[in-house]
Structures are given as C-alpha cells and as structure tokens.
Length: 216
Image (cartoon, rainbow, N blue to C red):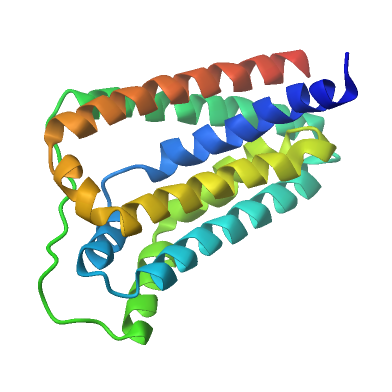
C-alpha cells in the first residue's frame, strides 16, 4: 500500500471519531449556544466570542486527552473500564437524543436588550463555558478518556478533529446566525438533528466496545 494512503487510512478514522464525538456533544439546546446565537444576531463581538468558546473547548479537550493518556498509560485495566463506561454513557446519550427527537423543542435567542461591552461579552462567554459542570464531564473526562485510548501517534489527530468540530459549530452559530436562527427555531429541525446525533452516539459506543474487547 502507498505510504500516504496507509497514513490516511489510519489518521482519518481517528480524526473522524473526534469530530463526530465533539459535534454530538456540543450540538444541543443550551445556554452557551443560545448566547453565541444571540451575539451573532446582534452582530456584536461575534469573532471574539466564537474564538473564546472554540479555544476553551480545544484547551479542555487537549488537557483531557493528555491527562487521561498519562493516567491510563500504565493501567490497561482502567483503560478498558473507562472505554466500557464511555460506551455506556454514549449509548444512554444516544437514547436520550432519540427521546428528545420525539418531542418538539427549539433554540431561540432574542437579539434585543442592551448591548454588551467586549469585556462583558467575554465574561458571559467564560461563565457559560467554564461554569457549566457538564463541560468537564463531557469534554475533559469523556472526550479525554476516549482520545487517550487512540494510538499514541494519532491522539493529536483526535484532538484536531474534536477541536475543529467545536470551531466549525461556533463559527456557524455566530457568523451564520441570521440564516440559522429561523432553522433552529423550527422544532422539526431539532428532531431530525437529535435523531442523527443519537445514531452517531450509538455507532461510537459500538466502536468503543469493540476497542475494549480487542484490548482485553
């Protein structure tokens, strides 16, 4: 096999797993996404807010992968346990996404109200990002433990995939707010999206189970 093709065949699945996992966790109706959408609708400090949210995610993902890699390096049993726990979490997350897909919901962000200074906008972005306990469970522990179990030379590609997903999502939400807001206000759009997220999470869960069994 051509060396370049061989490298791509190893890199792409790891990159795609990071990308899909990050998207599945970040694309949800929540305060952070509503805030980014609001700033986009107001066209107010959009670049700064998007960049902060994306960089914060990238930093947390990197810290999670590096920290978990160090913790799991000398403990294969713990690695398998976390892989199976992650698989169970993703299976439940996927089931919850399917449950949400059965009910109408929407993401709205009122563009009105007083304008925010750059400092105030960044403070709110930091609060919505870093004071949410789920960000540490999802981004640091779950994404970190899954990324840490990738081959040592490919962990950076997993981090890249997950980080690019975050950057792409926040960029689309902030800079595309004028076009995306009507779509996100339609419950049917979120039902379809939740169904796709549920399917993605189940596929990733199955891959984690296979990984754990192969390394048993």
